[in-house]
Image 1 (cartoon, one colour):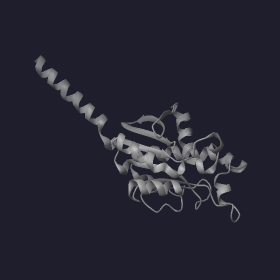
Image 2: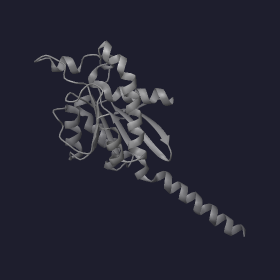
Image 3: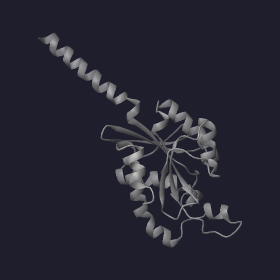
Length: 211
């Protein structure tokens, strides 16, 4: 009887262990941005801002590790690995590839958070593939992963800038009107990230795109 109980306990323990190590339940959520205080509140750093907002809401902390700052979050059996690359925007792919490999996370469980000039302010759009659209961070990720088929969450920053002022606009800070609306949009972004892991990419796209 004792041997039977021990074997039953062992099987359950191995089952739980296997569940925890299941790579399909681990997700890499990458916020794109540039390190340094001068970039902190710029439009180009919305990826960092979303993850910082998420961390503040959930009482998480980031730790500086190789190629970025990381934090872990668990929800309903899923593990979220949040990454803010420290490589600067143009070399984001190096950090993404390293942590995908180290954490043994499948490519379909990667979600990259980025700004998008082609969407109105606050609009959100989730895609499973696509071009880099001239975004240097996405371009480097595409080069390092050798594919355009990875999930990206585009946050609209609009294109309200005059000719020749794109860089100043992207690296500029949010205006007063944008700041007033930002919190609600960040809350919606958190909902999207959770849905991505819990409900899947297709359901999340149907629920959140254009909202």
